[in-house]
Amino acid sequence: MSKTYSLKATKRADQGKGASRRLRHTGGVPAIVYGAGVEPLSVTLNHNELVRNLQDEAFYSQLIALDIDGTIETVVLRDLQRHPAKVLIMHADLLRIQADHAIRVTVPLHFTNVETSTGVKIQGGALNQLMNNVDVSCLPKDIPSYIEVDMQNVEKGQILHLSDLKLPEGVSLPQLALGHDHDQAIAAIH
Image 1 (cartoon, one colour):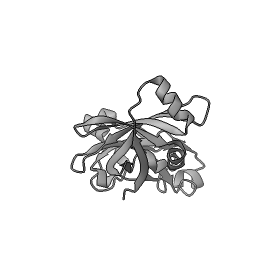
Image 2 (cartoon, helix red, strand yellow):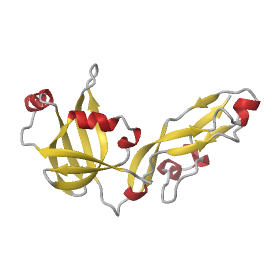
Image 3 (cartoon, rainbow, N blue to C red):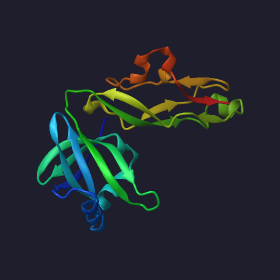
Image 4 (tube, helix red, strand yellow):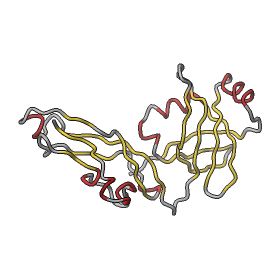
C-alpha cells in the first residue's frame, strides 16, 4: 500500500544563516532529522533530487529511506519551507518514525466517477470539492498513497462527510474520534 522513496543526505556541522545560504548556492538544502527519542541531526539534501521527488504527490506522506552517509533511517517529510518567488527549497524537516508506533500524516483525496455520477450526468449538477486532503492515523506500513472518494451514486444536493470515506484497513481518521461535530463535509453536488 505504501511506497518507500529514497534520498541521500550528508551530515553537516555548519549552523546559521550564512552557512545555510552558502549551502543553497552549491545546490544543497539544509534539513533536520528529529524524533523517535534520538537527538536531532542536521543534514544536507541534494536540491535537484528533492525537487524531483516532490513532483509526486505521494512523497509528502510516504516513507522515505534517508541514506545519511551510509546509515539508512526511515523518515517522513514533516515540513518544507520554499522560497516565496523562486523554485527553491529553503529547508526541510524530516521526522524519524518507529514501525510499531502509529503516525499521523496528511494524504490526498482522489475523486472518481465524477462525470458519470447520478448528480452530474443525470441531474445536471456540478461537483463542489470541499477538501483536497485529510489527516489519517495508522502504522507506517499502512500509510495509503491516497484515499479514493467514489462519486458514482451521489445525487444532486447530497453531501459526503468524513464518515462516508471508505478507509483501508488499519487507517483511521483522528478528527472523527473528537465527536460528531467534527465530521466535516468533503464534497457535494449542487
